[in-house]
Image (cartoon, rainbow, N blue to C red; front, side, top):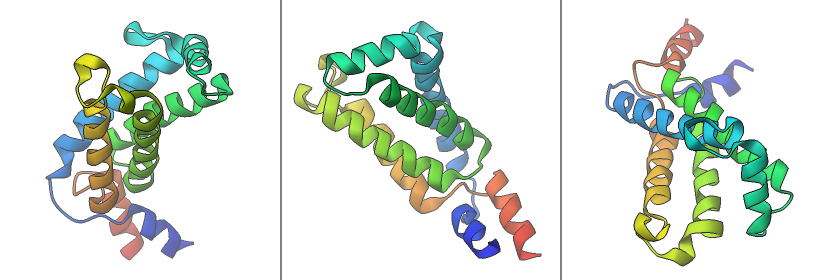
Amino acid sequence: MKTQVNRVITTTAGLDTLPVRIAIGITFAAHGAQKLFGWFGGYGLEGTAGWMESIGLAPGMLLATLAGSAEFFGGLLLVIGLFVRPAALILAVTMLVAIVTVHLENGLFMSNNGYEFGLALLVVSIGLVFRGAGSLSIDRVLQQQLRN
């Protein structure tokens, strides 16, 4: 069990991921809060589910709950630096699905509801999957505790 946990939380020392984790984590959490709770001008779970159904993503309520939860809870995990690798992987998959199902046909630019923002979030998430949480993270503290 200790080995499995260590694989999930392993991270490399450094402060380089801290600003990235915080900025992207807040962004993801805010987008998830829009989908789940209707905060920050979002439509909430029912509105998001209805929209997903309208573009052919069914069942809308399940998919809205999954996407909103991945973004909200995954974003919070990035901010605090806990289980960053698996959270970032889930967020990367979420962004890949969003790009392919919603934004790809609109081209690159956000002004046309394109995929540039989703692509940026995808790439940063992939980077965190490879890099880990960094020094100032709960993952790093847990990793050090498991070594002792």
